[in-house]
Image (cartoon, rainbow, N blue to C red):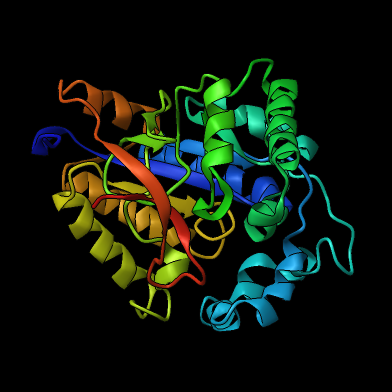
Length: 307
């Protein structure tokens, strides 16, 4: 079942991966969203900004350098971020800017945990021990409590890269939902033959950094395609990035939000999308988890196995 045309929802997820994204991108997006009258779910990286360590993927992951070139990473992220955690010291992200973080919820948006060390999780999760996985999630959760005075209700794995261990830990935290993967609709993940209680609200649509210079020549063409996809998908979720849409592509996002309103599409926090899906009365589907490719991304991402 789908949302009706009169109240078609588009889940709006905002990932904050770097110090500069937190410092400059989040305020810019909050201003833009206030102007457009929309709300979303912000996932905040809490700990060190080790974004510069991404350079090591040039040798490890085919296609990584090409993606950096076609998306103009140096221009988008800036030299300070490109060198963060390597030639320059890593700065804290949300912990360094708690007033910016608290502005998110003060202005009516959802806030959740994205990571402690985004780069370490994204690059090394399979090699982390169970205790190290728990420590990454636990430190991020505690940082959220330190900032907001209460535990988070939602987590989102960096780069849509999780595993059964991280799902089990999230289950212990009694979250309202998580957004750890790519997919097509909200669902319950199955681990060890048993459905977990924590629903997943996956990103269903491509992201701008995946599309630029690959499937789409520019941001305008990308967002036009997203309008079409959001008009036809059952439970669409779009992820934007504080560093990208809160930076050089802010005007493209602004135009997209105007066009979405004109088409009767209302961006909303992911929790609202899940509530609308549950209100249909149809039980959430259950899927085993695995990995698969996404066009425009190097490597694989966490996703439900639908067959």
